[in-house]
Length: 297
Image (cartoon, rainbow, N blue to C red):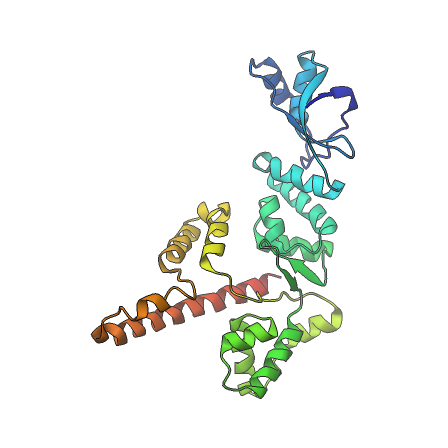
């Protein structure tokens, strides 16, 4: 849609340094047509394309092509960050993250990291600085999780005492915590300890968030596409290695049942040992990742 430049409002830009005059001149001197700008319809504020608008004015144009988006001003700023991410400095991204933490405190560290191009740990540090806390957080998968897992640990402890033969996953599903958390609760109970660590109890008393481990395990065919699209994994040596491991070893809960009968009888014990060994290694890695995640917040 063509829109008069005079009706457009200045951009709420995530760039702390504003526009680049040199880039505007380069755009204006180019023979290429100016691509459409993105405009927040409720306010007519430019979300993406301030340089293009200024270049159009230098060319003597009074109108530009525009694409309109709806939503709140806060969501418009988030979109502006996403659309301009590749050209933002670290300082720009950190400032944007602080603002998103204030406007969307319910978003998880990973969700805000994906929007701003920062590491989730960096977002966690900024969250503590700006006080962007909420009773629950929405992850990148859209699931809502409580910030403090103390209640889930207590429920898991009660379930373990009531149903001592229940599996880790059964208790985890019933309590809304991860199997790793259930394992830790079971260990603490066996030592005569409170299922909730002191730091969590202290955080609970102070009203400070302690992150909840994930409440359910998603199927690999749901999780792997999300991970493959994550640039922080794809452009990181260790991240690429993890992706190769996951792609090579991912098995959905129902897939293995179809092949069990086809394993020759003389190989079954060896395959079982290998599967169990791999499962234990993956469990150790999962526990380590969860500990790192808890320590980062």
